[in-house]
Image 1 (cartoon, one colour):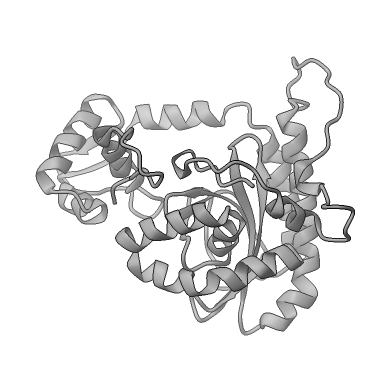
Image 2 (tube, one colour):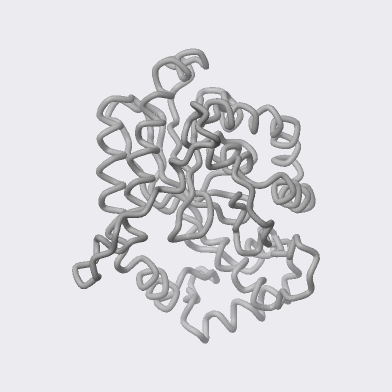
Length: 311
């Protein structure tokens, strides 16, 4: 997949974009890849991939394994990811909140962030009773076939959601075909109830429920998602039993993100006065849920290249 600027500008440096596309191929399930496999995943010519992997290897972002004739993530890429997560103590708090819900709900609970047409688990908790449900931190899920993905796209401004779908139709047409006819109904449900559900899209055995919230740290919507076995939790049970627990978790995590943005977790941070949480504002005093108010707010449209679909 090539990263393209959906805003129509020509400010994307293709060689940099393609290098990151190569690194993105090394997800949690595929740790060793050859040039042909990378070429198939990226949709790039094998000769281009060969030049990129050679350069990334020289920079330490990849390691070449001569016996396998494949590559794996190198120390420079690992060091970069470690430095990016340093100081994010908020994740410890979020992990604890997810685990608390996992003690009550027999499923998987995830805190995910968007990356192109997928979402990546930043934190994850799993109930001991969650049979057949397996993910981990760093795992990727499809945006077009999951409740989390539908929640994220529904939270975007319509013009940005349309741009994302147009790009998805070029690179991931099967996923876009699933997502596009559902987006309007999903957006209405999100505005009315603060969450979305997707039953049997990713797997006929899995039903999902998810809610997006704004992250000041990442300047994009992140998503709290819960997956459950469809044999145990049909759609009605998701609405009645799981949705209230999800929305409670969203409020808690949203408060954690807001406080983290004010640096209260940093011991060396100066004291600052409390600020209202942007995810808990209401419109015109109406009795509407906090997330719905957040997704209705009008803001200037921004480029999806910055992953900023905030309203």
